Image 1 (cartoon, rainbow, N blue to C red):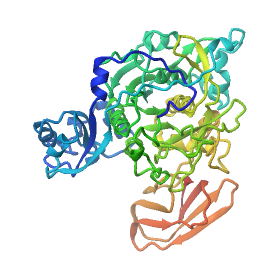
Image 2 (cartoon, rainbow, N blue to C red):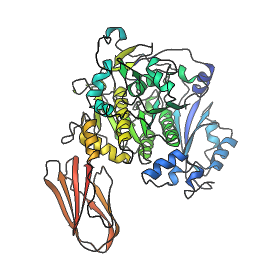
Image 3 (cartoon, rainbow, N blue to C red):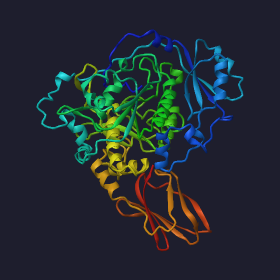
Image 4 (cartoon, helix red, strand yellow):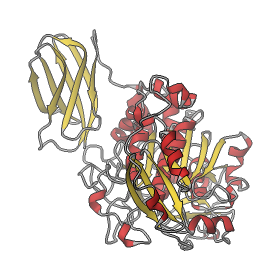
Length: 546
């Protein structure tokens, strides 16, 4: 759980609804397929919201079977057996059911469409653990001349103020925040501007919908203040003009894998709202029942449900910012899920001088990808606290929203760019872009430089038919696709940021349009310029080797 950091925790009594929700066994039930579905990918407008469709259309992302709702006849069959369905995930194609004993689940095991049943939570009344935070009264913020107040350094460290000065503060962007709770966001002054301008466009609690939404955990509230906070001369977030969807997927009173499936449900809800960015300051590796613990080998981007869902969100056009975890120096030491997710930005922490924070989880991912991707000031970050004051806290939970807000501000400036183009520009701007490592990834992003990179983007020249290159980032293979049949040889070259050609391949063209090139195992991780030459046509792409 992401609360393993210096954050603010507020205790309050459990309502009967909360007790009921926890005093049950929860199972993940995965289905074999989506047969007998009443919807079709040829008519996505019948099951995807206009906002979700618009994001896909803007980035030329096709609608696939993954986007189809779970087959309603399967849901009906589960319910007819007397099992209450408490959550549904179309991306993972399954449901979470809650039962009072371990025998009831056997009623659905014979059903032909049930692929897997997994116990993901035990009955629990465990309460939250309190962590430390430097008290607000120890900070002297009144004499700070900057408009940002004590939050200045966490923004200027990544040149975020440059975007703000140009007027890019996240306006028109929607950030979905997946967290444990948003205590008093409806009353604290850090969020006055969000409330006054109607910027909180949706709220949803996947853990316990019956409880008062703003009387929950304070972790997400502090996280939100780093993006949407706006108290002149005291605290300014990285995207104070953005809109926000507040989504509770984390049960702060216990720690079980069910929360990873709820994370997937939360990401799907963000998709349905048309969110541009997801911030998730949550992470998982160990649970209250040690038999459910993850292994480091699971941190490969393909094993855990939340990492899979994060990648699916990215493939649907969103930018997903995720905290790396606070396991640095502990026995685990490595990133925790969904920080291992593919196609996402995983954030580690540095201090105000840009030095690696020892608590920040290290990479790489179990399959060797560079993680974390980036680092921001998660050490002694200045936040809104649970008691209505302001204070400093430690954790990659604070590094992620600092980045997410700046991503929104940058994307506001270049709305025509895809999520991958935005992410690649940010990685390229970072302090360690030439020499990424396992503690800070590509380093501290420079959003002024990222703006320049996008403003001077390299485009193909002399492009009679067009060419595409994927995936980006890539690992072992590069796929090249022309929009028409190629009748003459072409050359593929990779050039490092120092200008050296590190890979060159002449491809004969047997009247085809697509090729798959295996990259040499000795090719180092990092940024490259890919140059594809065919006759008088030259195509240039910025790509990343992971």
